[in-house]
Amino acid sequence: MLERTLYNEEHLFFLRQCERFFEREILPYHAQWEKDGVVPREAWKKAGAAGLLCPSVPEAYGGPGADFLYHACATEAQGRSGASGPGFSIHSDIISPYILQHGSEAQKKRWLPGMVSGDVIAAIAMTEPGTGSDLQGIQTTAVRDGNDWVINGSKTFISNGQLADLCIVVARTDPDAGSRGFSLFLVESDREGYTRGRNLEKVGMKAQDTSELFFESVRVPHENLLGGEGQGFQYLMQELAQERLSIALLATAGAEAALQWTIDYVAERTAFGKAIGSFQATRFKIAELATKVQATRSFIDQCTVAHTRGKLDIATAAAAKLWATEVQGDVVDAGLQLHGGYGYMWEYPIARAFADARIQRIYGGTSEIMKELISRKVLDPVVKQKQGR
Image 1 (tube, rainbow, N blue to C red):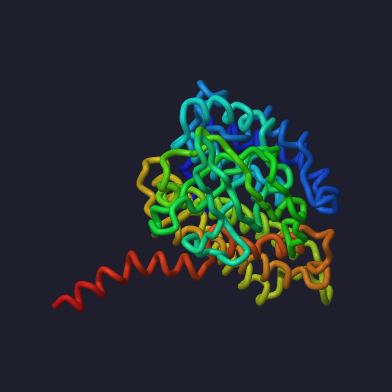
Image 2 (image 1 turned 90 degrees about the vertical axis):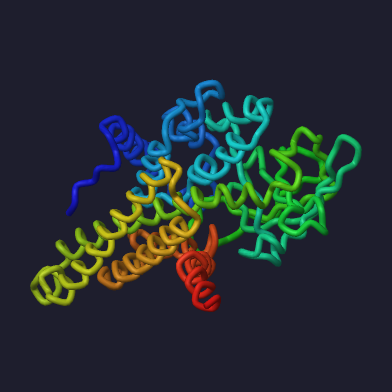
């Protein structure tokens, strides 16, 4: 396999630290957390103390000020561990950049130190019961009332929703302004009218709390507006590339883990007096999976480097998410098949990975939405050129 050149020695040292953290502090307890439907706050604080949360937050706001590759290390370690419960990457890779890039100085000083330490758990509330991937269909409203905004609406499928102390809420502030009619608000979970609904029971990722949220005349001061009024949709588009890359990083590491679990199993498991791995059908399938995983790793590493240089465009980020999550789905499905009946047993990590991986092709934008974004970049300009002749 090709030697990776993505990380320097400091990154590799941090990656090993992250891997040890998941082995020591997460995996021994993960099965119980799956039964509980939530990862305890103590695990978040331990992750903060170990430097896994929000590593790119500057020292002025309590962070180490590291580059995005440290985010990649933490996400990769989690994906390879098979622990789907901790919503660390959502908190670190998706939510903290909104505050860091668009927040006021007061907002950064108030929230980022706690997010780095794990004392503040954050969520982002975009999806609504009737909208799915259609962000422009959002119905939650925020109406100005003096120096306050009054928020009404509901959200669903909100990761970290049960634990979140802080939620970035996407709301419509001008019903007649189209994509310029949305704004982002920092909403504390203890505000009157802010209600957590059910901790949703999912097919997989059972240890990660995923919630309904309700906002009934929730009043927040104007200083809780994140960035400019009417700029919410623009901010979402700017940050989606990193969100989708983060999902691709998690999926790639998950595919690598599933492949290794399968290789170990077929090398040990016997049938008809021989190791399963000695049969040609098994060997060819493993060769196919290994090739897909290696190609995916090379592509995602390249995308990660591009992102650190500010060169990852929307279509390429969509391609990264589409390819990595589809490959992960293929690998865990084939891996489960090669495990036979044992692959269907929850005690085997391949079974949990099979359930956990399915959502990767849905959240952050479905595979179909990713294909639409890619086609706009590679096909539409050619169509316009040809039609213009």
